[in-house]
Figure 1: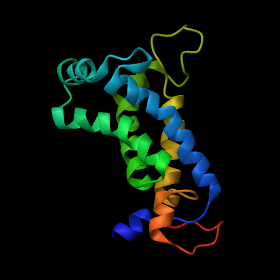
Figure 2: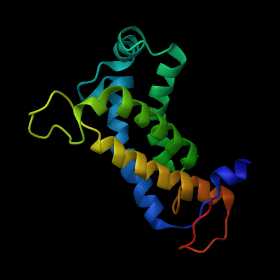
Figure 3: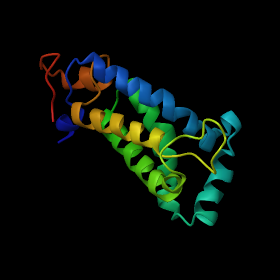
Length: 156
């Protein structure tokens, strides 16, 4: 089972996708965990998630894992499918609970109440591609699995 989770080929496109997703998601996690980029840090975000959004404590902790730890795993290419799954679930919940009422588009011009779903839709799509194909080239998963698949084949 573990081998199936880490198995990947030498696909450099998957590498590009996992790095792009990590770069985009990590600042959101750093806001929540470390208070960087104008965030409220662990205590502030945890309080908001559990008290104002009424998210159960264990699920609130999974938000921190998905947005802070998963991007680190993606950069390293370690447990890429698991990391991508965590991000996908986190972003699906955010899409439906927070952003869907704001429409499709991001709030580029400040004309709407909040951010739309386009960013989340794109990130979920990238996460699904990583869940299907794995971490790709230049990854710890690739080193561990020593899979001999051809560069243009996909593993399930």
